[in-house]
Structures are given as structure tokens and as C-alpha cells.
Amino acid sequence: MCEQSTEQPAETGTAEFEHILLANIAAVLLYVGLDQRILWCNQRFNDWIDGKNPLGEKFFDVLNRPKMRGPDFLPFSKVKRSGLNSTTVLEIAKGPYKYLRMSVGPVFNEDGDKVEHYVVSLHNVTDQTIREEKWAKLRQAGRELADLSKKDILQRSPKERTNLLRAKIAKYAQEILKFASIEIRVKSERNPKLLEPLFALGMAEEARLRTLYVSQDGNGITGWVAYHGKSYKMDDASEDPFFIEGAVGARSSLTVPLLCRGDVIGTFNVESQHPAAFDDNDLLLLETFAADIALAIHTLELLSVEQKETAFRSIEKVFSDSIVPLNLILNETARLPIDEFQDNPEGIDIGDVMSSFIRIRESTRQIQSAFQEHIAALTMDIPPDLSSTDCANYPMLRDKRILLADSDESVGKELSRLLFYYGCTVESSTTGFGALKMLETTRYDACMSDIKLPDMSAFVFFKQVRCIYCKRLDGRSLYTICEPPAEDPVCPEVRMPFVPFIYMRSFGYDSGHVTTRAALAGVQKPIFKPFILTQLLESLKQVIVKAERQETKQ
Image (tube, rainbow, N blue to C red):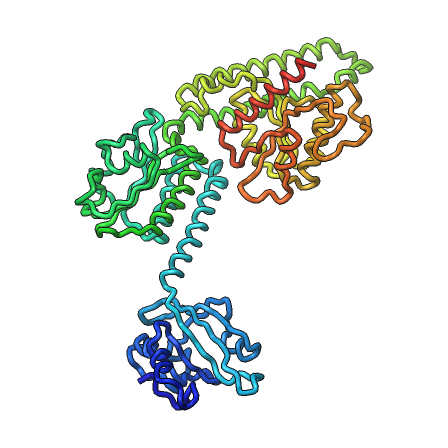
């Protein structure tokens, strides 16, 4: 038996009770020599290795040379060198357990100054490690879904975005969560009570085509979850009054709501042919994954992409092919040095030249107006987030000029494209210094800035912007030096207590505490990138209207 040893781990006369305890304790225990050969082990280790006699064998050879997962990668060497305990996780290639936590402690000589043997304990941590791996993979999946939104929202068509998200969901649900039967439904734009299928895998055709509504009665567990906004774990289909079969032969299921900022936008359902197939950890994993999916769906605007695709592409083409070149014509004709023709020896009639430039500008603006009418007609077929009706809800944005400071040029292009439909002009700079120079020569109705600028603190940028607005309101030169100088967070000499200023940020830690300091200075909470259109519009509406009221009072 394994307890027999060529070298006794305890002195002669050790109580029989202690020997029995060591042999039968629930943990796996071993007594190992400095050469890493096993000198003694209890019965549990003997059971783990199918009754083979391990005495005299090297410890790692008996376990088929497992992989070390850390934190210590040389546990015996560490104990011998330092006399301290060591811990690592072993990944076992063969046997009933995949992961073992190995703890190694020293056994010293009589003088206590030298390690003579090792005491090893092994604990099965397979379930715990697999759960931790699932969580790590799921967190990575959530990051990839978020990256999908940022990278592909401008690079792919709406249909391609939808298909890509479906493929990602299927991959993660099968590879990480091991779910084979999945259904995701989202609220319809046409009827908010209707739950339309977005994605289904392993579901019966009848179930996929089934019409379901947001209701606690008659619409299965899916309708109940969407109605209450709560998760539902079903262990036995034969005993559950709400269950309507989705996958053939389903016996148990998990259904969780897709929540975006507290609102239910859909449901996520998984089913199994085995009763009580899901535990509380599965439910928590699914809820976490559902939160990432809900954010991706919301960001990509998947709730309406199929309906808006044709009109959206037409509008994009008008914008890219026509509006930008027309604006360039207006800018170039406005900056030509007409006065230089006054002394022209060729006798050019300056009046004719100026009249030609005026006609060019008028014709250009007529073309612009025609395009705007065309766009207004196209947007009638687009859902409310870009419809002409929605544009009418933001008349205060028309003919407004916005200044943007952001090191990412694509942000400026996207902001210009979005606000184009609302009559806004966006001018941008990739540095704070460049944006301030633009602000010194042009009046802007609102300013926007990322909380991380490449050449200056984003809060310093805000204070400089506020200073320029303040001096203009007070009728002073922009180059006047204020005394005393502006202090953080509020300048004691400020004439304009509110500045139409908006910070933008990505999800993550604000290391410079820019948003907190800005809030103390009266700046509203930041908006997140990539932009959610309604949030962007409402933020601009608030700052522009408030600034106009302030100037009126002055």
C-alpha cells in the first residue's frame, strides 16, 4: 500500500491515531525527498493513480509530467532555497482531475537550518479553474464585442455588421459557455411589444418563426422575461407553466433580459435537452454575456439597420460625393484676393470678376439646398433616429458651428457626418493648441473635446476655451491677460459662468480625473464614444440652448 515507506516520516512511537489521520484525511498528502522521490503518501493519492505503488518514484513522473500554471513554476526549488511554502496549479494531461493545486512545505533537520524533506498537499480545483477560465474568456469576448462596434460601425454595411455580430455571438456561446441551443430576440421598432428574432441556433424552425410579444401571459418564458426585465431559470419543462418548446426535446432553459441603461431591448434564451442542466453560475455568466451583447446591439444600431440600409447608403453617397466639394468651392471663392485686381494692368473689370464669384457662390448654395431637399425626402423612410421628423425636433442645431478637439481624425469625420443631417457644421483639430487657434478667429456655438489630448491637459484646454468665451462676452481683447490668473477649477474673474462645452470619453478609467474637475467647473457629464446619437443630440441641445439664454440675459 501507499502508506508503506522505506523512510518513516514520523518518529517511532507516533500515536496510531495520528497515523490513521494522516492516511485517511480528505486531502491528498505526500512526503517527498530532496530528490523529489515519493517516500510516503496517504490512501487518497493511491486512489488518484489507480492503486499503482508510487513509492520511490519521482513526484512529477507519477503525474505524467503536468504543466505548471503558477504562480510558482519551480515549487520544490523555491522551498529548498528559501525554506518558505510554495504553491502552484498543475494541469494534468490524464486522470480524473484536470487541475490540481499543489502546496509544498519544508521539513527541516533537527537544527532547523536545512530543508531535508518536503510535505506536499494536493487539492482538486478543476471546477474552480474552469469557471475562472470561462470568466476570463467571457471578459475578453465582451471586449471584442465592444471593439467590433468601434471598428466596424463605419467600415461595414448594416447587414454585414449584423451578420458579424451573429457570428461572434455563436462562437462565444458555443466555445466558452458550451450552449448549443440559443435564441436572441429584440424589440421591434414597428411595434415595441413585438419580440423579433435576431439570432437563433439549434432551435426548431417552428420556434424561430413563432410570434412572441412582451407579455407575462401566453408568450412563454421569453415574453415573461421581456415584460418583467428579470432572469428566469427553468429546471423541468414538464412542470413549468410558462415554457414553450424552442429546441426539440428541451427539458431546461435559461432566459435573461438584454438590458441597456435599465431598459429591456430584448431577450437571450438558451435551452438543453437535460433537466436542471444550468446552475447559478451559468445564469451569472449568461447575464454578463447578455450585457455585452445588449451594448453591442445598441451601439451598432442593429434594431433598425435592415430597414434603413437603402436610404442610408443613398444619403452617404450624397454627402461624400457632393456636399464636401460644394463646401470647398464656397471656401475657396470666399478667400480669393479680389482686391489685388484693382491695380491689374490688363484692365480687368473688377466688377465683372466680383459678380462672377457671387454667381458661383449662389449657384453652389442652390445645389446645396437641392441636396438638402433630396435628403429630407430620403430620410422619411429611415427610423426616427435619423428621420426628418427627428431632425425637426432639434431646430436649435441648424446653422450651428461646432469645434472639435480629438487626436483621432475618424471621430471628426463621424461627428461631421452625423450632425450634417441636422444642419450643423463641424470643424476639428487633432490638437488642443490647433483648436484654440481656430477658436480665436472664429465664433463657435459649442466646443467638444476628448478627455485625452496629445499636447495639453484636457482640463487646461477647457479653461482656455472658457477664457476666450469670457473675454468675448465682456468685450475684451482675446490677448488680454487676466489678473488674477484663472485657478482650478473656477476662475474668480470669469464673466461667463456657463460655457457650451462637452467632454467625450471612451469606456475606461479617467486617470487625470478630468470629468470630476470639469463637473466642479460646471461642465455637464461627458458623452461616450462611439457616439449614441440621441445622447449626442441631447447634449448639444442642452449646452447650445443654455448658452443662448445666458447671452440673451447679458
